[in-house]
Image (cartoon, rainbow, N blue to C red; front, side, top):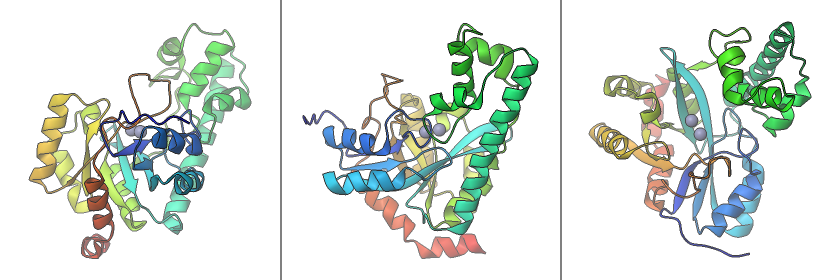
Length: 289
Ligand SMILES: [Zn+2]
Ligand SMILES: [Zn+2]
């Protein structure tokens, strides 16, 4: 297999696999990281840690460090806020329970949406949807794809605009964690809590600062959807509050050709800093109080 060392970073700390909505299996993802010459990669699937073990096996075989991560979808004042967790304790009961609940709620939500769609005259089975998800975290995009495949609608956009989007006839809200609860959950599971792509939600300084006392330890400054201003703004904010600056591509597979694994990443020094934070007992005790 050919290795092409064309990446600009040593570590990519934001990647999805088939365990959530990525196109590559955890093993394939780590293999790609190896091909690109990455030294470390974090598996950060949405609301699940089920990709870790396969990724770690491949990582051990190829000599790529695998960081145990997760990306929690949370809400804050009606905005969707994503919180990344790193080097969590997978055996943490509270983490396992909370992730199971989030997965179950996704499943129940899909059944509810399909029922509403049936009332609008569209007959879709759950399997029609899950085959697009190729993993655990099935969601509205997969329902939209199924509607298009069955020839009911022209494209995914129409599906969201007319049926699945907020306020549309088949809209069902999802159970979501509050952002501060998400941060706490990661810390309780002995992980490092990092705010993902704040530029996407245009999160304000005072909002982000208010999360530090709940245990926020870092900001994802490098990200495929951040422009130079975002990078500067959130980088400055991170150094002002002494927060770790992380970065990752948010790679999902070839579905977004502009997003390449290993770009927008960080150096191994950041990985070391991150692991140092994980061992920071003092901060953890403060959070516990
Ligand atoms: Zn995200
Ligand atoms: Zn992501």
